[in-house]
Length: 376
Image 1 (cartoon, rainbow, N blue to C red):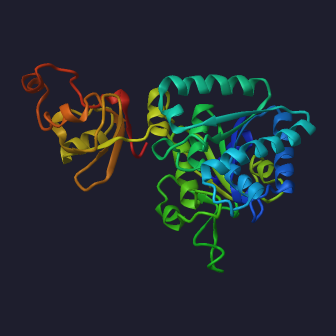
Image 2 (spheres, rainbow, N blue to C red):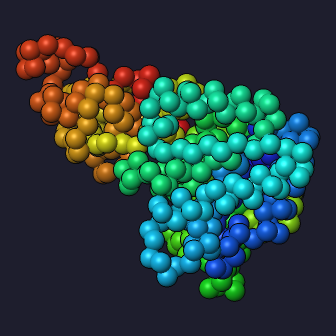
């Protein structure tokens, strides 16, 4: 059995699913909601719930819907448009799902909500409660209050993190095209659909484009990176055309449609999964070849002796990136020193730290329990 077939069978067996739908799939060219697409999506989601599956919907469309309501000529910013469009979006979902005998719940998040461990666990508890009750949580970024440093970047990344929060089995990313192509299908008539992306398939990342739509903030590269992020915690991801009738049901029945992305062989759990999916790095530690090799072999903590220099300002407990001599990303982890103290002990043995600082905050810069390798 091929890996692709195996993954599609996993999709068919999935019990807890996150479905992300983008603005281009949900809206018409002027930003108004596409009633036919939303009705079809809701029918599919209701059927999944009737089958006993648990579903979370991550929905874009607030900014587009706000634009469709008041027009572009007023010159309103995206945050104001999101404030106008979000209730319109939820009202439409509520109407469609109510007609199918189902309730919906709105969940608005910022990156800070999931970067804080306590709030992350609280979000997990509330979402689990809604899922157990057979209610459809509809998640979106809280655009009205988000600032750049607190944003997920786009809803593809939000969906990957939500998949981790709810411990999903599968993530569906619904967009305006059938999946990942070898090149842009609208520009290249010879473009071919890539139906399967393996763990170390660099061809796929090269083929993905960064381009964004008139209303959306993500491109195909964003979707592929989101699929990889979800894959780090064992979630199987698939990319498909959102306006295709029945696409959600077809993907979750293992039909050979769209693009499926292979998850990591070893599923991260506990704090490591949170570090890998929910934290934004605040700085970078550059290590020598010996430290890079020790970390890559796994099971090692990062000691000050192996660090050459750092970039950025970080506090104790912040996430930092660890890169090797050639600049390659090796790992991410939670640092046990702030940037000021850390800069004084690079290259030192552990028994020398107290002499320099006057005390020993920790033996390691990053403990192995707080470290996640980049290729995990």
